[in-house]
Image 1 (cartoon, rainbow, N blue to C red):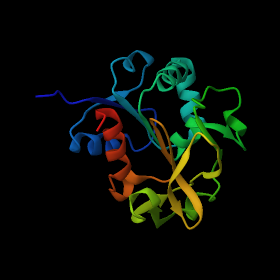
Image 2: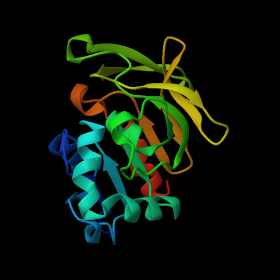
Image 3: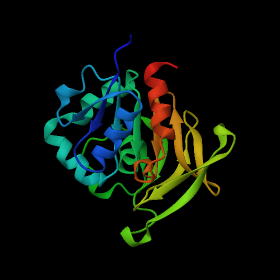
Image 4: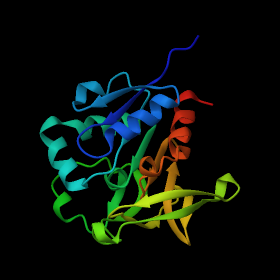
Length: 198
């Protein structure tokens, strides 16, 4: 019998337990990652939503993102949601307070932070997944970023109207929304398949 893969959930901020619970329900063993030395031995990692500048500031003295960036470049499967997408994005048009702090910058997209406005502008809406027979899933957008450009290395895997809201680039998956809030496990299942090679 194969042992369960170990999936890290970056535990600096955000819906850490929700992501952890979903991956556990899919058969993974989860570890809450707060230090760079916890990245070794992971089969995959989730970067949850939260506040991207706060996460970057917390991670900086811990040296987390340079180590994680190296592992992602080397092929570690990753799922980033909301702020996680911003930290993965190669280009951020309104980086502001992120300037001077490490990000992963491994995903060939341009993101704009908090593009939907403040907490009061948050909403739930169905999004369409073109590669899944245009199935729709419920998505929660909370101070969500916008993907303003998708580079040639990445492809759109979910849309809200004509706007891309989730992308994949090889072993990297990122979404502007919070799938863990609505309980939809589609993106987590995709991550699990990347990890297991299925």
